Image (tube, rainbow, N blue to C red; front, side, top):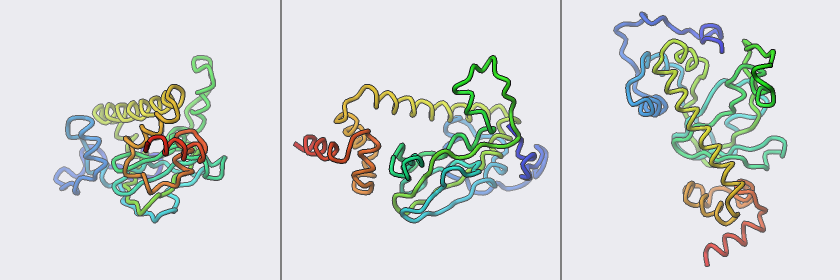
Length: 234
């Protein structure tokens, strides 16, 4: 993984700016520091790589097949994540306040995702200086505010400081657990159980997401969702 300095980002040395007053904490930094259970070193470097952005309903936070070494923390509103092979009709995820959104291939060295189907120990793959590209799209559901986090800076901090490396590991582990839970639910729960889980886990999105999107997310047809919702109300 390239250092931030390898990608044209100015990352001062550890001895730089000894008396600098750090800017106010971003929500993303506070979330990571809470996850680490301690203040993280070089906060001012991380904070300078945070950009707050706003999106209107229906506006793309990012599209598929983009060079996009960023993750997005939702501060207000909500985002739906879609599979571009279905013309943004196949909803694969939703994110509300406090959730991180991104496309993992775009924050990994190009070619690394191919190792999912390879024998890693026998592979001749070598880390590339280039990052990958997004493999999905993200669209604002309502007026949405996010903090954009530059992964090139985060990776550089992780290489230099054990505390950042550990919190990065914990954040990725939580993401993997969430994906594992969603996969398990799709395989083991009934459609009605998945719908009830959605009501509990994302109540703020009820009435904002079209029925077809909710149906796609829980793996049923829109007609099937109407029947399930009617049974649940009874």
